[in-house]
Amino acid sequence: MMSYARLWETMKERGVTQYALIKFHHVSAAQITRLRRNESVSTHTIEMFCRILNCRVEDIMEYVPDP
Image (cartoon, rainbow, N blue to C red; front, side, top):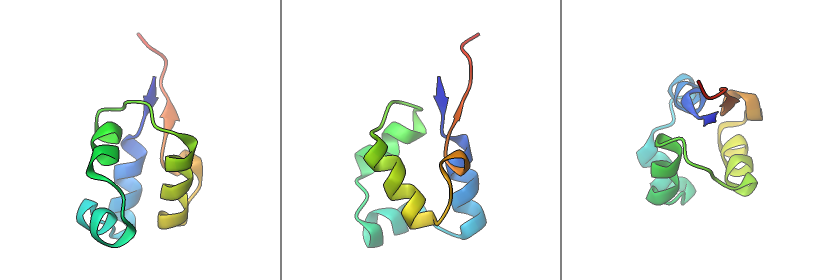
């Protein structure tokens, strides 16, 4: 399973809020919800977050084996 817990940590470190993502970067609320639920998202979405946060993929997501 992919975990996006690192995304929220990276956002906090960089001072980027969900509101800013929606208002200034035009990220859809639905995409944020999918990430919150650790649901699948496209590589385009991952790339967009890397660009917005100026970070690497591993700063956003990680693979966590299913128990």
